[in-house]
Structures are given as structure tokens and as C-alpha cells.
Image (tube, rainbow, N blue to C red; front, side, top):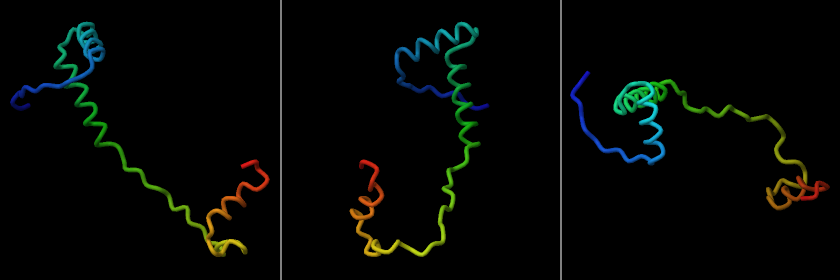
Amino acid sequence: MGANMKTTVEISESLLQDAKALAKREKTTLRALIERGLRGVLAQAGKTTPFVLRDACFTGQGLQPGFEDGDWQRIRDASYDGRGG
């Protein structure tokens, strides 16, 4: 495997107590439990694929008559017209 290294990790007290209890139930060490968890996270990180936003473009004729100037306030008002907004 490789040389063992010592390090300090700060975790919450409740998480540490839960981890110690699990290690005791599984008759293993806290170190082994932490290593197992890190290996799992690292293995999973290699499997995730980056999010790709689908192309949602559409072909149209642009803005409707009366909205060509792109006045956002008028567009917003029209979208809520009759909807209580």
C-alpha cells in the first residue's frame, strides 16, 4: 500500500461518537472506518459525470408585436396579466 501518515482531522463530537460506536460494533478501528469511508467517496467521485444543460433553443419569429423593444417591465406585466401578480 504505502507509508502511513499521521494527520489531524476536526469533526463534530456527535459524528466522532457515532463513528466510534460503529467501529466498536463492527469490531474494527476508527482508522479503518475512516479509510473505508474515504475510499468510498474517492471511488464515487470518479464515477460522477458533469452536468450538461440540454439545448433548449427553439426557432421562432422573435418577440411578439408590442414587445420588440425588449422592455422587461412590460413583458413581465403581460405575463402576469389576469393572474393576480
